[in-house]
Image (cartoon, rainbow, N blue to C red; front, top):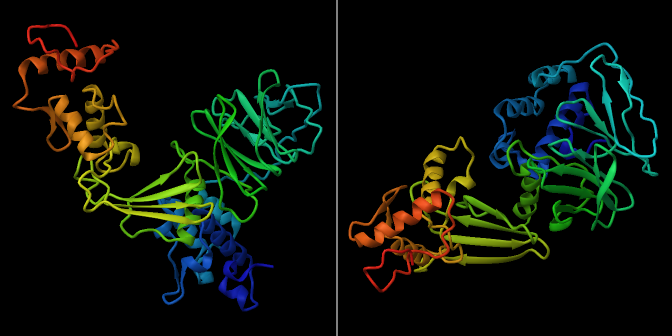
Length: 417
């Protein structure tokens, strides 16, 4: 039986069709994308869905497919699953594919299909437990009795009802690590694109982020009211759908400040901070106007207003906060590279506030002209010479142990201080 918030209009009137299931599928999709209840996404007054405004960046073609799945009128909705798959570009083959057989060997874990479509078992792992999931490598040729294979195809992770995560070496089936931390069955995995981090979901209603280099938990994401059964990463570097759902917990409970344009996900604690930077596009280092931090463990909210603060926090490296197709991305990235070349990022503890940043610029005889770093016209020529020498050595890979800002008291000295 379908819950009312997921049911198609005709189904609520007792006239369900095959297309009613497609409507429910569309509602499920937008719920997963936004983390919000369907009742909150539907504008009853206008009779339309308002999911796009809270879903973030979604491919336009996919969004159009979802809108058609959600069409109120049957004549506007997809008539069949085949029609949906056609728009998704999925080809359905009528002939059956060769069956895959997995045999139980003493060790190993991967079965690979031959180019002739004749399947042969290369190696298998004996888990002693029920296998509840399989994962395919990116080329679609490697099958593993597990939840995820690393991007480079060398590592496999498996989870089971014993609440542990096993990290395997695909080539020889050797166990590299056993990760513990979940308190119930591990049900889902996703690797970061560089393969250094692992995201695991569990029936204990948490998502754990692991550093595979150390085998330690980096952070635990909480907020789900039920088991976490699926994880997915976007094509870039962030677990966008997961974090979108995570942020949805705070959004649904507390609400998001209307002018917030930066969301910070804390890596070691289940906290989210909404930040307002009024001049994000025009100011090379915009100052924070307000911040609202939410602790998802107890829903405690800490609010701070920097409007009258003489020394507010400021942003650096804005290009890391936007997508490569963002209108100002290239300009932001070029500024960050220039500031790094000038040695302005050598002491992050110092430059996090407006006054600290201004002092850093002054010490480096620099000033900003829009999104460019230039030499100050009133700078001491000899000091500029020392700083330029330090820049050249930095660019060539030579480590400079001391910062040129501590100028020697002897003006005739020609060595770096």
